[in-house]
Length: 171
Image 1 (cartoon, rainbow, N blue to C red):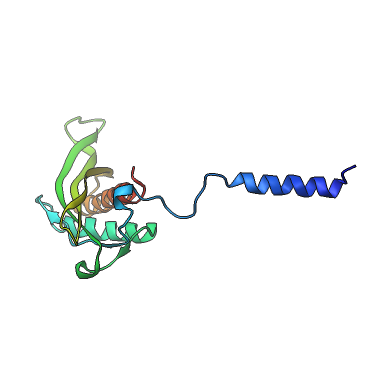
Image 2 (cartoon, one colour):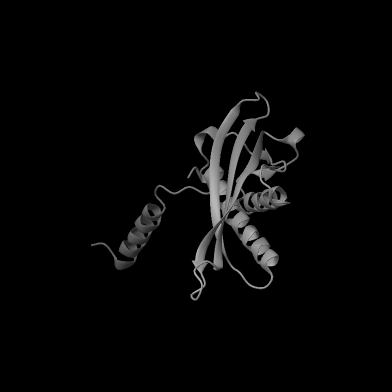
């Protein structure tokens, strides 16, 4: 006859061993980026007429990659790969109009679009290419420039999250 404490011990050991089946610690990088641990991110190129947007996107991306922890951000001469990119478009479209005047905009949708390439520093060949875009909304008030700047910062944060997920998790 099996004693109750041994049955409880057996069940708890079986439960502990089966609960973590299939899980691994840390992130799962895409296979083509598995060998990259140190990444350089120079300032993106600005192909738009929006001033300082390239540095805003680059800073947001570096912060997001550092928070993710999949890559160590280093200067180009110490890196395994270099992520170069460009801000290709800053779009503004009317999201909402004033109720009394449909030609007057009360809320804008701002969209940032980028292209980026990760290049291996030893061979010089591209490892990964991608496009990404993100949107943010701004309610227009008396200070339109300040409102747009905040919306562009928000779009840059969203965009950097999409890029960081793509290069660290593969989706």
